[in-house]
Length: 381
Image (cartoon, rainbow, N blue to C red; front, side, top):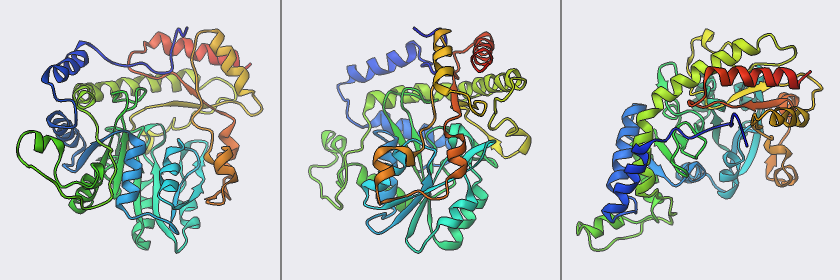
């Protein structure tokens, strides 16, 4: 159906062989390949404190739980994010306070708005590195440190992205990654948590597998015969097939991100002359803050343009587009909930109907970018 899809898997025979080897081994549950994946991912991120989990929503819930977020607490997060960032906090019993974006050029959460919305009940700040671009972590970390508030990094878009030389996901108390099928590193369903210190790592390791003191693999190998349960944990274990695929995908990640960067630069060059189209992050590298993972290619449509009409026109040309995101405060549940505070979101509201996500993935050719740009220019007239 799509001549140019929004995303595409960068898979080859190596991923298939990795999965085949797991099936042939006879051990599918979290085990040695998961440990290998965690080690290699930690080496790539510059930290040994990495745990692979079921998905990024599980990672977020594990992070909030390990930080003792609970009833009566507040978690500040952007409204312009996938709903899991907020839902995981709500599932812990906390209230969510939604924060505004910086502006048209930076769709990340605004540190000044975070500071305005802190109360004595604020337990954590969840930042989202939107589209793979780092938030202002200097400002956010300073705000959190001054008030003794934890920082959770939702780095679902940002594997190997950096801020001032450090990997995103390693700057806060806990970082969360996603390995969903459309992500830069894809295994189907999967995620990871990154801990600031050994105590948090141990807490999340325990909670990941029912609060048990030994794993099924330990008992299978005869290293243990029983277990104790030290906490009311969850089953957020990843399986060996996805971990094995993750090891292969990790080997493709740096090159894939580099290709995404080149494609994004071409988009910015080609779209610069299209009247009324805004280009968030166009000047990102001129600021010298770090490296984006370029997970998404967001643009802002001209004021008054019908996004639905533009998307239909591009669909007619075989170009798939999407929206990232409907702001959380506009969903039925969250908009009506008295556990979600949603004041002061003017900048988010101003761009909410204008944001359009264009295709971006390493399999794209330069000619594909040119075709998408031509389709967009024709569709907004």
